[in-house]
Length: 208
Image 1 (tube, rainbow, N blue to C red):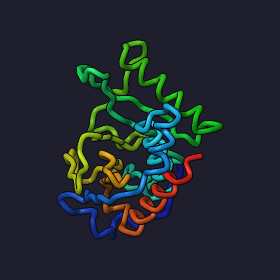
Image 2: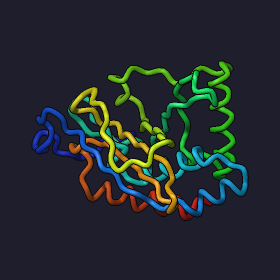
Image 3: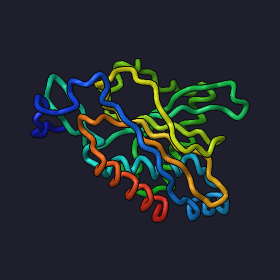
Image 4: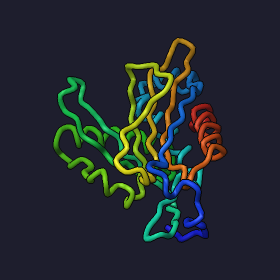
């Protein structure tokens, strides 16, 4: 990571009780949805990859505050809850972004294998206290595939928490999928969220 110039003392949101805010919007996922079903690939994994790429294309989403100074990570890993088919094992995994791999299919297989190893106990899952997650170069991703939601709120551990939280839902009959993102207004404005959704749509259309 590198330190960047940022006037944190005069930021209008720095002293608010909570600077966290959320936005939800729908994106079209028809191309990727059909490709995954035709090629027996995980839509969950591929969606995670598209959303991770979108997050990593927005510099403001990769920023953190340490000791009153603003730093920007080179990239963010993804942390996501995973469950087995019986829904009786619930753990978290931390995955490197697709940009660290030669191609998206190598990344897909890496995530599938890692998830299986964690759920079967071969590999330990991701463990980190919620209050300390801003110290890591991570964004939190979560899928709610049972609900085609219109909006979503999140628990607030700390009003000055920075880590982005991204949640996506059920694909509806029009192949649209809701994506919610929660960020800190200290570092991220509406224009940056607009870029995130633009990039997310691009990733779902051009995933190769």
